[in-house]
Length: 365
View (spheres, rainbow, N blue to C red):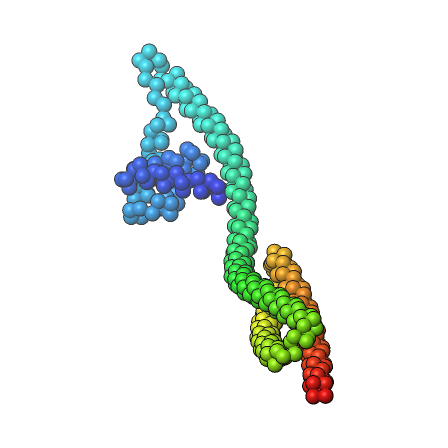
């Protein structure tokens, strides 16, 4: 009788279970024979038993098989022992009992075959489901491997982006530091320029006041000289000395003013050079900012603020240059006025000398 692959698998599983229950070789072979004959409808043979159990010598399965058939024959015999029944009736009763037992055995075999068929179908369905689950598991494992690779690539990309962000943050901090330093230097130079401008304005105002005061004194002296020309003829020498001293002081004052103006111009030139250097630094910072504009858009506002401050400083410098130009024009006008005053004084001096000479000539006459 042929046996299907599923029945053979089930038989092997039952034999493995019997190995744990029966440690004796003959008992194990006997139970395997019963399982093959009654459960699977197989006729056990010595060779088949040895292939399945593989325990003991070659004579062990034959001995166990003979004992199994002997026990089966004894159990299949039905003995009717009753003293009141005739021998023929007892034989007929025994024959009927054997027939009933055979029919029951056939019905059991049919039920067992049906059960085996249903079990085989369930086993086939379970194997198909298992194979489908294994295929799905393989697909999931492949998908998991692909997702793992994508996750690894994503992690590498994230690490690279984090490194780039860190680099940009360091460059941003460096730019912030340079901008803050430049702003501080610009503020310092602007404060120095403002102080120098204020000092220059105050000094210019002092010189203007001194010039006005000297001019006023000169006018007062001139009026007094005109009103008292007669009385002052005798003191003309003294007046001339005072005039000389006044001219000398005015010349010294003018020289000192020129030196101070030269010093202020030099300071202004130095400040212009410093401002030019700062402008160059700001231009370099602007170039760096342009190169990182796409990555650091937030720096645009700060750089625009720095540019507006630079424009403000340029405007202030232009105003200062205008003030310096106006101061130079004022100084030139003051020089012209002083030259005119000197010419007028020389004319007055000549007139005074002529009058003295005429007076001397009239006294001699």
